[in-house]
Image (cartoon, rainbow, N blue to C red; front, side):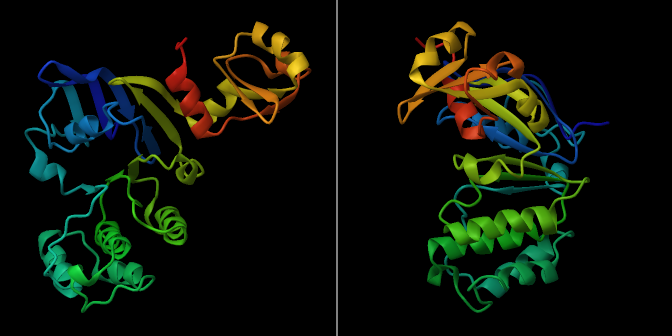
Length: 285
C-alpha cells in the first residue's frame, strides 16, 4: 500500500531554530489523521513542507510526488483549508464559484451549492458583507466541493459556532470522506474531532511524541480514578501522568495491564485531550 504522505528525516530550520526535528512519518490512504501539538511545536512548518509551501531537509513524498519540485501537479489532488480564509472582499459569491470552477477541473458546482444551501450565504453576497463565520462557511463549501485525494485542514472551524462545527464534521464524514481519500486535521479543539479520527500524531518541540491508530491508543493507554487512600498504590505502578479532580486522583498509564489496575478504582479510556496533556507533560518534574 502506497502511503499518501511519507517522510524520512524531515527537518525544517529557521536560522538557528529547529522547527521540525528529523521526523519520520507515514500516512496511509483512507485515514483521518489528527496532527496535534501546542503552539510552536512544528505543526504548521510540517504542513507547509507537505503542501510544498516551504523548503525542507530530508526526504518527503506526498501522493508519490516531491512537494518542492512538483507542487503544481500535487495541488490537483490536494486541497488545503487554512485557519484564516483569505478571500477578496469585493467579490460576489457567484463570481468565486465561477472562478473556482474554471481553475479546478474536479470542482463540483452542484456540491458547492448544496453545502451553501445549509448556510445563510447567498450567491449575490459580497465577501465584505459576510460575518467571519459566514466567510469560513463559504471557504469550506468551495474547498469541500473539490474531489481530491488529500484534504488538509488547519483549524478548519475557527470562528464558527458550535452548531455549524458539528454540521461541518458530520458532512465531512457522511458526504466527503471515503476509503480513497485521506484527511489531515490540525486543531486545538480536539474534543470535537476525536470521534472521527482514525489516527493520532502528537508533535512536541519539532518531534513526534506519539503516532498511533485510535485502536492502538485504546489498547495501550488506561486512565484510573482512585480515592486518596489508594493513591500510593497506584503510584507504585508508575503512571505517566497524575492529576487531581474533586478530591480523587486520576492516573494515566502507558502499557500497564488493566488486570493490574482493576482493583484500585475506576478504569476508563482517556480522552484525546487528556492523553495529549499527559504526553506533553511526560518527563517534566
